[in-house]
Image (cartoon, rainbow, N blue to C red; front, side, top):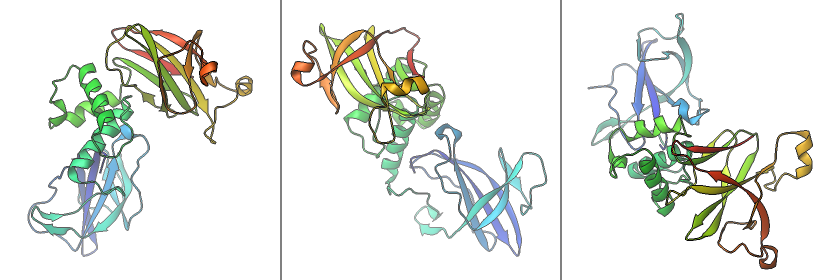
Length: 304
């Protein structure tokens, strides 16, 4: 899977059940949870994604309910929870397969990733949560992912080979919980999707790029190959139909666009533009961008 998960197991034998957990499993990795032959008649599994992902993306359907605890636990009698810190969780009965690694049960997504693809998708997913544009999350190491990963490594002053470290998911999760720590990021505090555009000064001219999709409640860090001192930012809320929310809605609720006095060119579809002399004459849209001065400690533009 492309998520860092924690798993718990339940062993049922002759009507009695015991549970133990949590076993952390990183994307594309295996974790030994039992040694030797399987004890008991039936083995059950419960898995949960870590809180950094927001609401758990894992289905909570299953075959039986057993007790778990918040932290590492071994519970000998688990049909009912009668102590503080314990709760009932839904477990699924499993039949591990015989492999060269021994008896193995797999957690998988519809994408059916290989181990390597699961790790790459897991890195992409946490980069996006941390505010870097590594979309789409597909387990493919294309140029866009490489740029986002290189920016993350530079922002966090890591060695170039950091992505291969065993603790790299720890580093990613720490960054995902504080996305404004370095560089530039947009953070969307509204209930609408915001499409954002960026202007960067390159070799004496301003290059605008868009659109970047910033989901509600999320941050996104656009790819910046250099470290400019000044950027230009524009954001526009879109409705459920994918179209911009009209300015008339402003009086009835929060802002629907975020810009400024610097006029630069954009277009409705994905773009990269460097000529801003006559937007309308070129079939483009004149858009007011806000000037953003970057600071060494990190700069965030908030859509509220």
